[in-house]
Length: 282
Image 1 (cartoon, rainbow, N blue to C red):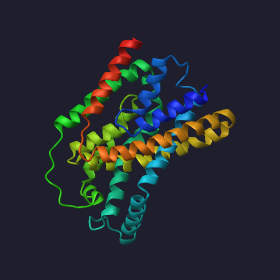
Image 2: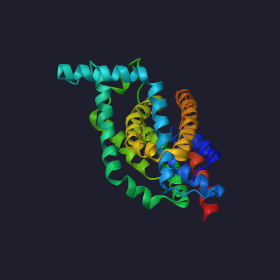
Image 3: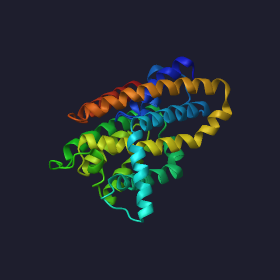
Image 4: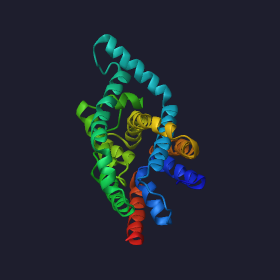
């Protein structure tokens, strides 16, 4: 059972690491193992707790970008009314690109998510894949294409210039995040860098892409959480509050950070914490 203390710590951890490119699920599995907490990460109450914290993170992302989502939804409605998807309607175009980017991970997640978690859910495997996540982030920096100076002023107009195939490739990178230790934010930023986006635009596309897939996955599981009720619901609500607060500050920090910085510090951190975890746990 998760105690209120554990709920706050794990909630803060999830809120930070869900949006940082360092894998929230990997940390949620690794930290209890390193600290000797007797928490069964496969237990129903733990899964329901993580659902609540993910839902809080999705709400925070939607709150930060709600104006953009209003424009995107209006743009998509306009494209349906006109029966045309055109780059002259950049917000509508961006909305459909996000749909294309969501489909690959959504399908694989529905079909195989439980299999991925059952196979890889152990502190040692999480530590190993954190090292792999660090390698992915380094590869993204050293192999990314250098995009020419962008002429479009608005970020969403720049994102609307992505091709369907580029959006699909970035979306497919989210599939890697089904493995505990591989970051969804990190993998999609890497995909964005490999498809000509700047760090700032890759983060924006990653956050917009995250909102529906994290939110939808959480909403599907919320009935089970409310059905559990009692202590589980109260502890999950406490963790969700901590996660939401942490997610807000994480998102605002990262938006500023990636205007001028790179993935390298996060890569070094993942490799270091993963290696430490392997040494201690093995």
